[in-house]
Length: 271
Image (cartoon, rainbow, N blue to C red; front, side, top):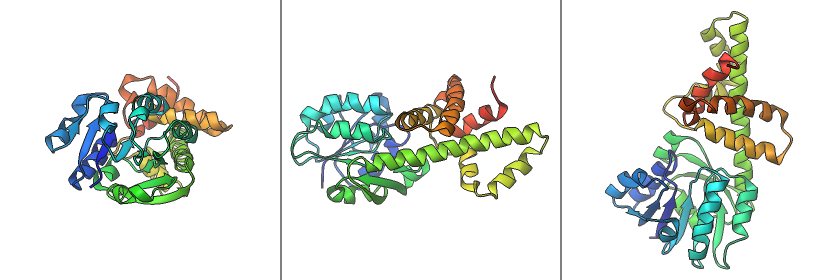
């Protein structure tokens, strides 16, 4: 089987790597905080001391990192080590520009695919993620099938672009729901009644995400994603929602908490 290196074992990366290990792939892992790799190592994964060491003998490299800066740092380390024939599957939410910049640095014979995912930790654990794949995904489609369903989006960068579109809509919707509930509170409406009415409206799916439990998408990552989006286009609504989440992220208790926790803060209004 293909030798896999998985770099980035956060809330999403760890269960994704675990699924590949369970599927029988020889797996080398790396994470900036090595302790996060311990459960995988206990199940048979090999822990690398650096990104370069992790990818040195890999056939497939998967990265699930926090953002563009983390991707750049990892690319600095791994690009010289990638062998011709290696496929790098970049699964973070970093936007198309960051993906193409990395692609331009690769040696001949090294293939880059951008394949960010839709879904949270629950879907990462049970292998039902939606995978938005840009570029030629053929060689790694059997690997990705253990993580979810692959949708081919077009050329390199298109997966990253579509993920940014989806996240902007979802995060924006969550912010709108929080404001709508603030309006309901101001008008003296019962909160449960207002929430039920919103859940029965066309915003129902977003209402569910605004109050989701047992999933995790950190508020600081929502701020990062909206920052990339508003840097790419003039998006006044997204800019306003971003301000809400930035303020929520200033609270240490909310910075790394799921965006559902930030809804309560946005609903209360400015401090």
